[in-house]
Length: 212
Image 1 (cartoon, helix red, strand yellow):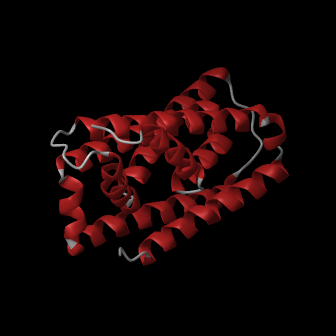
Image 2 (cartoon, rainbow, N blue to C red):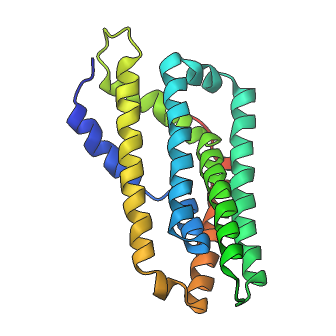
């Protein structure tokens, strides 16, 4: 049913490690809100990837790609959302102040931020048409030509999701390990400026991206 499974794992690792909107968003949310929100962001990304897997297995992704009109709408929604997140990150630099918060306020803020982190990770990945095309073209290369079942697609898709979650979780924990240094105002300003600009750049790139 599945061909060259080990090769699929190796290729998936290299592809996941390439910088992209998901990594930029995980970096942003970990820096702004902490490790738990970074992990929530990755969880949202993973759930969106499962939807992409299901859509590719059922042939829904192919229908979207074949419709230039709906594909363009999908693309611009994703591009605008990435640009929005980037602009919000840059504007947040203007509003940062060193304030003391009581324990209850901190817990409330973290809880709300975790929910928002999950939503941002989910929506950023779900509305990225490059992920749609990736799952539509990448997964079938590792499924036997005579296969008529959706099971291999789910095996490959879930494998990719697990690798993605493991690598991104490790990345978030590495950021957390340097938390004391990263929380310095000068470092925060530099990192948030970079990640905000990167998100805007990904949004512009996505808007100008022409499917071939």
